[in-house]
Each structure stands twice: as C-alpha cells, then as structure tokens.
Amino acid sequence: MLESVFGDSISIVSNYTFYSPFSKYMPPLISPYSWNIKKQILDEIKTDYFTYTGDKAEAFVLRLYGLNPKVGQRKETSASFVKQKMFESAMGKDTDWEQYVEPEIVKIIHENWDVVKKFANAPDQTYRVLGMKFPSTGFW
Image (cartoon, rainbow, N blue to C red):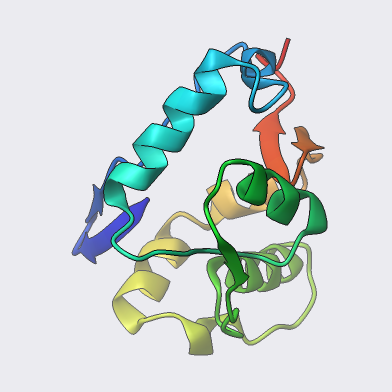
C-alpha cells in the first residue's frame, strides 16, 4: 500500500502480499493461504468494517471472511482514474490528467513518459478472480 511520496522516493506500507502461484489462495475459506492473507489484512485494520469497491464478488468473499464490508466512496481523482487519463494521453488523446496530480509529480512523470507510453500500449495481463486482480503469469 502506498503511504507517501517524498521527492523522488516512495514509502510503502506492507499490508499483505500474495505469492505465486496465486491459485493456491483458491478457494477462499478452504485454502490455508487465504486465511493467512486475511490475518495480514486485519493486522492493519483499526475499524470494525472493511471498505471495498462495490464489486459483488469481492463483497461476497469479504463477508465469508467476516470482514463486514461497506462500499467505499470512490473519489473522482482515484489512482486508477488518473492512470487511465495518463494512458489515454500517451496514446494521443488530449486529456487533463496533470490537473489531478501535484506539479512535482507531474515533472517526474514527464521525465519518465516513455515508461507510461510502454504500459499504455501493453495488453492487460491480469485475471480477475472473485473481485481481485492477479497477474496472469504466476497464477497457476
């Protein structure tokens, strides 16, 4: 989980980590690996509920784990929203993604624009399973 950005460095807080093969976490409730992930997630949760994106499969699994899910309110300027606008811009569309990002970060992104273009044109190599995305390589 991204905690903060300072200059050119990023601070990451470790909430939970999936290790390949990711299929070992399936099916939830039966796999002991899925219970380890639940414990890692709950170690950082300080409230009696868990917010999620609104995906029905995700809500179902969260309820199975006893996490008391509530749909979170997504802000318009979520990371996925800005990423999508950046990718559209990298593919030639005129977007306003810069207005949603701090000027210092915009500068860093522009300095590394070739990386953004590379990923904007790359196919999505993830599987969506029970409301979660997993990389296609390493799933099995």
